[in-house]
Each structure stands twice: as C-alpha cells, then as structure tokens.
Image (cartoon, rainbow, N blue to C red; front, side, top):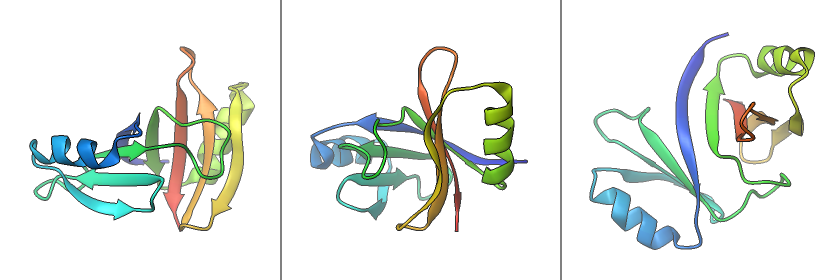
Length: 115
C-alpha cells in the first residue's frame, strides 16, 4: 500500500474567507461540493488543504485525509490492529471509497481512494 497524498481538513463556517486567506499563500480552488472545498498549489498539485463545514455522510469531521492506492488493504490493516473505525468503509457518491479511523491521540483520519 502506498500513500499518494496527505492533506489537513479544516472545519470552518467561513469557506469564502478561508479560500481568500489560503489564496494569499498561492492555493487555488480545485474542488467545491458546497460542504467541502479543496485548495491546491498550482505548482505542486498534491499540496492541498480542505475546508469543510461538516461531513456529508459521516458522524464526525475528519482532521486529515490520507489518500492511498489500496483503501481496502488499509481498512483491513486498521481493523485488524484494533484501531477504532469511526466511519465504515464505503463508496461515496462523489467518487471516493473511504473510511474514518481514530489515531492514538483522538484525531480522526479519513482514509480514501478515488474511484
């Protein structure tokens, strides 16, 4: 299993203001679903940050996202390790397969693969 990218997820009710703020650092909007917006560096597209008002299908807002090449293997490893699965492995309507897991410090990690 390989990690493709890691991005922080910032919970915010001020998406426009956040887009403008991170735009000052060179980020540009690359995705906006209304409840989540992803900003990326044009020169380094994998350098990203997501701004989220609340997750559309999960009970909590994740603290970060980790994109992997094999989300099913990642899920099996986390489940078998005894880690707390916060949101089950499932395909989402916006084109990702994902699950949430809680890290040892209580942070929620969204582990995903694009479909």
